[in-house]
Amino acid sequence: MKNITFTYRKMIILIGVIFTTVLSCERELSDEAVFATFPSTAEVFTDTPVGLGTNFYFPYGGSKPTAWTVDMEVSYEGNASMRFDVPNANDPDGNYAGAIFRIDGDGSGRDLSGFDALTFWAKATQAVTIGEVGFGEDFGENKFVTTRTNIDLTTNWVKYVVPIPDPSMLIRERGLLRYSAGGIGPVGNEVGYTFWMDEVKFEKLGTVAQPQPAMLDGQDVVQQSFNGSEIDLGASGLKQVFNVDGRNVTVYTTPAYFLFESSDPSVATVDEKGVVTVRSKGTAKITATIAGVLANGSLEVTSSGDLQAAPIPTRPAANVKSIFSDAYVNATESNFNPGFGGSTTQTTQANLNGDNVQIYTNNNFTGIIFNNTVDGSALTHLHVDVYTQQSDTSFEIQIRDVGGNGEIETNVFTGFPDGDDKDYRFNVSGLTQGAWNSIDIPLSGDLAAQKNNLGALILAGGPDFILDNIYFYSE
Image 1 (cartoon, rainbow, N blue to C red):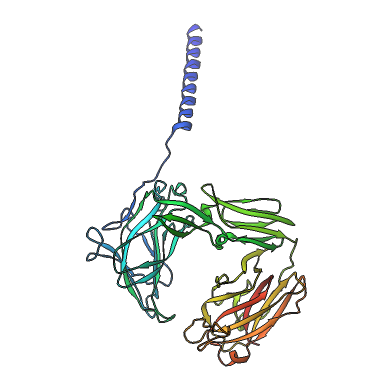
Image 2: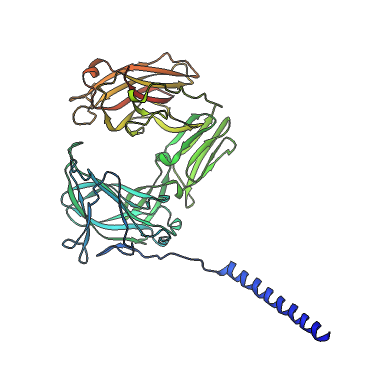
């Protein structure tokens, strides 16, 4: 019996020691453990792609898939460079060059938190402007996409910098490079060229300074809205300006870099993706920061309560070419914020209980610019649903055919189309306040004989209204 008791006591002591040791180890792990990290390799391309694996080049839809190669004849440093052959507009394999360079493997990534910029050397066969160069796109979440636009290249090697908005966010990034470049010349007849990039890498320059983040392109937007509406700030000019070696460099960013805040969450909340949801009647102000720096621009949203849904279109889809409507497949994507000089318009797309609408505030003139022209030869009318809360709302809709060259040409003295462009102008007035108004505009006047290249709608006046169900149709 004594031996059994002694053994039992030893077991209790042994279990206690083990238990204490385990707890001690757990405390050490909690306080000091180093969790799995990703390599902090700086280089993306020197004489060859660095650490990307075997399946890393993914072209965008419509781009020429063979636009990128490794050039063993041209280099800034070393023995090779990245060569990009931008195609002509009529190239059957694609009318522009664009792709991402992504690390192969779903569980892969790099820790870029120790750097402050992506840098590269570049030159071209002639002076050209490259549309986009950046990083962060992986065809997955695309969470930290960062892009520098309109980069001017020369025939000499020049170093370029794409600043990182907040390096601390990039602890596992797969998308190490993205680019998009089109030809030069008239729309539809662009001519290709070649450009090169070399010594593509992430660096800690120490000269990326004075961060100036911005939401809504730095504007303080005041917007009337309604319960249930959703406003996507991620599609509304998120960017950051840095001073790099004495020059301002702007990069366009995604909401994940920003910390958004609402002054009254009972009226409006905003999530990490920059989507503002209006919840109740009242006013709330949305602001944001990047790495503790307050962004220029804000959204003050005032909800008037519930908004009735726009009419649901009933015309057969076969008779319709839609510009903006949830009821049809749109015939083209469009730019609802063209940024006309002198325009005071603030335009925001909102989702009101499942229905997307375009909200116009303080409009003097703006446009809806079609990404691709619409052939309206067999069409007879433009339909627009308009909602306003103002009794005196009146504005002009100009339906614009952009002619054979696909470009908007306007006489600066008269404001009317120039060259081979044609338009038809219709005054929207006498609207019922607090209700949806359905407007049908004939494709008439000078436009009647030339409507095969419809390219834009110009909106002049207002000042405040909401649009939905914008589409061309035939009787």
